[in-house]
Each structure stands twice: as C-alpha cells, then as structure tokens.
Amino acid sequence: SSRIAAKVANVLCSGEVALSKAAYKGVPLASTNPAVRGLQLQSLAYEIDQIVHPFSVFSLPEGNEQMVSGRRRGMHRAEADWIRDGRRIEVKHSKLLWNPRQMHWYCHFTGIKFAFHEVRSEDSFDELWLAIYSPRGVHYFRHSGRLGVYNRGTMTASQGHSIRMTSRKGITDPLNALDIVLAKITDGGCELLACVLW
Image (cartoon, rainbow, N blue to C red):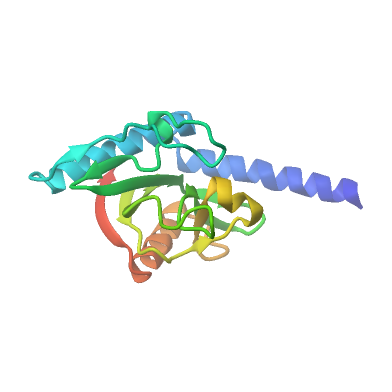
C-alpha cells in the first residue's frame, strides 16, 4: 500500500541522513551551507591554479554576460569562474553523498554549460574542473569532456548538463566508495590536478 511505501521511504531517508552525518562528523566545512562551501572550494581552486601556473596571467570575469533569460549575470553567476592566459576556467563541486534507495555513494555536478543545440554553440568554458568534497578531503580534477555527462531534458537549455559518478552498490563505507569514484574518474580520462586532505 502507499502508507507502507511512505514508511519505507521515511526509514530509508533517515538512514541517508544518519550515514552521511556520521561520515562527515568533524570534517572541515561539513556544517557550512552548500553554496558557501562551493564558493570556498572555488576560491581554493583559484589559488591552486595560480600556484601551478606561476607565470600565467589571471583575471576574474566581469559577470556582465546575458543569461538565457535575458537578465545580466552577477560575478558569481558568470559563465566561467576565472580566466588564465585567455582560457576560461569553470569549477563545479559535489559532496560525496549516500543514496539509500540505490545503496551507493555518488557525486552529482550540475549547471554545466556544455554546447547545446541553438542555445550554446560552444562550451561556456575551456577547462572544466570538478571538485569532490568528501570525508577524506577535496580532490580537484580536470574533466575529460565526456565522462558521466548527461542531458537534463528540457532544463538543459537554461540550467546546463549534469555529471554523475557513483560507487558500486552495497558499499557503505564512504572512503572505500570514494576510492571507486576516484578510480572511475581517472580511468575516464580526467586528470587529477590537486588534492587537499584533512
């Protein structure tokens, strides 16, 4: 019955909260608002890029491009997060999360503006960095351009594509699951740029 299904869903969701909460207990930035955490991870990525490319010229976007809706963007909504030697760098972040229904840990990156039909004739960036926030630390990768990308249907035009990476089903330990996700990412042609371990 629908009442039984609702009770099962509530139990599964409480398991999700408990498992994720236990995994991130005492981890830096765990209690930080996701949007604020994203800006902090982006700021750290910018510093890492400056260290890796000490002789490059860096600039921040002006944030004056128009969105699909026609409104102007603020700096934090610009198509790219910074520019290095004329190359547009975009950083997307995801927290390693537990999915109780699928019984696996996963990362989900959203709002990625790859080229899309008549809306965008080219990617909105030259380099896409993925930041995985986990109980172990933060891993930064340069995306290969194809791994895990999927279309979001009618929302793709305005909200962009998504990238989703999962561990194997039934692995409840987040660090074991992270190792599987990291292996999938590197095997898929993404380059590890830096990691900051707790």
